[in-house]
Amino acid sequence: MVEYTINKGIGRSVEYKGLKAQYLFIFAGGLLALFVVFVIMYIAGLSQWICIGFGVTAASVLVWLTFHLNAKYGQYGLMKLAAVKYHPRYIINRIRLNRMIKGRKR
Image (cartoon, rainbow, N blue to C red; front, side):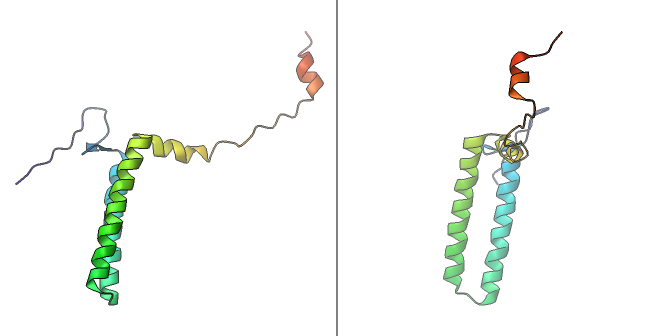
């Protein structure tokens, strides 16, 4: 039986086969969701080969997308992308222009 090690040092995030942190959860959750959709399609009466084709294609896309995001954004990249929507688009300055140029009087 083959044993796989999960590399976790002190203070470091979990890494498995190059996937780090939240990408592991995306990968596992995606595969679980694909399995549920596969079972629902099969129970609904679709052809076995259509279900298998969908499952293989969707799983391949999921694997590629997860590793692509991991390589592109890194360990904390998805959290940084999610934080961008909380940044203001612009900052409003309500001070008159001539007061900004002159500065404060002492």
